[in-house]
Length: 314
Image (cartoon, rainbow, N blue to C red; front, top):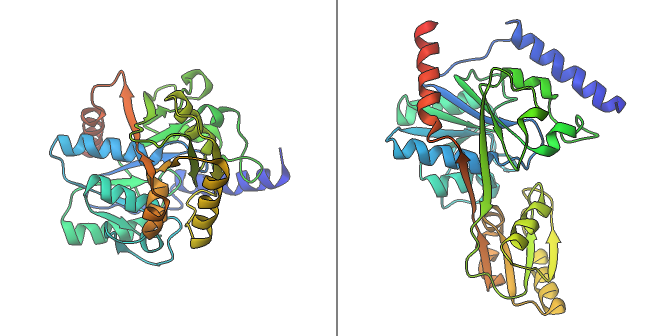
């Protein structure tokens, strides 16, 4: 193992042990907390799954809010996301969640304080904790962890992408197999195991498009486009959560001209990060991600039952 990865793993393991032994204590909100997280640094589908679970909760008439760190934002402290705001204020993924789900989304480095703000503003209700598996300072009532095939053979940061070793799944209540992951590759004994299909819904994509995106696994997006019989003539990839500048737009337009492309295609997250530059790249197709649960009618009943059992068994 890379020495830096070994040091990183030791620090993470020691911190988890302090929580497991009760030396460090998680603070609890009045409303139940459902955490959606993963083991790796990006690319497992946390945000689409939060939106999928949010839609299922809305269909049941269950009121909830979303708590998020707001990765990549320039602001500090607890903020209520304004759907008409900018990613620099709130982070691209919280902004996308707020726009799609139309429920309160609160960002804050301290998710407990974000939750307290939510309860003071909107009353005691269910909280969805976005990217919360490693945020153990906030107590949760149900832990959902998404895994991908790459996680099974990856290494710890910084030599790999894993934030925690696979053994951390023992803390999970439900393991979600994403992108074709196999249950045999992970320690899932005694856990609920759900499978999800993640696809794209391309509409009105220009002929011979330039594909560009700033996401964790850009090649997956390209493969999905090709599977939908969309063959890009050029590609431009940026770092995850990339905030687009005027220079980027000029470079993309120059790439379109050089490649004789008919337009552009990108993701919803990138559309958020383009902000006011969106119209400058017309014709541009913004492709939504669609996530569906396989072989599970509705996990909400299972989650709420488990939360209720723990509440009355405590």
